[in-house]
Length: 132
Image 1 (cartoon, rainbow, N blue to C red):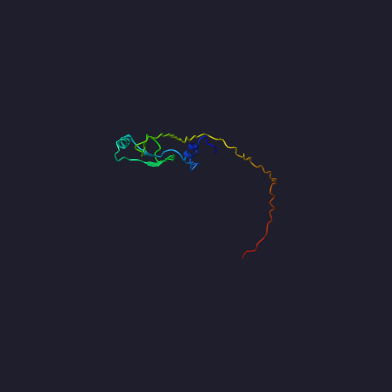
Image 2: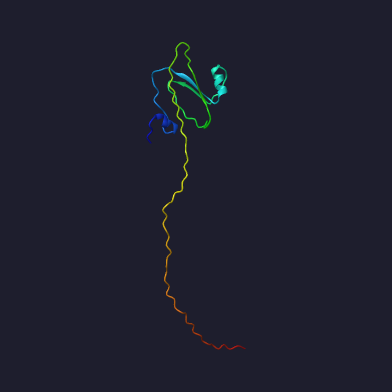
């Protein structure tokens, strides 16, 4: 299959790895399920997350959270220097389409058999049987 971007290939599960860039700074990232936990992350308190990682380039696929809102928390571990971060998020939705399909089926014609019937002739004969 052909995909316009590598993210599309990851989203449908066809591409399993990408080339990691050799330059740039790494960043900690967290996928946070709701607003309350995002506020806890912002205030540097204990928070709930469903995925996390650290790196220059990261990618992943999430099949558990299929609806609703989630938050992405980014944390720079370097206190002296800021970093630039580029985020791309892709969502793929499966749409099922149902339709009536007419298949070409072989039509079965009845088989006609001609029978040559003749009237049955019965010959009667009388036989005498002695009985005591």
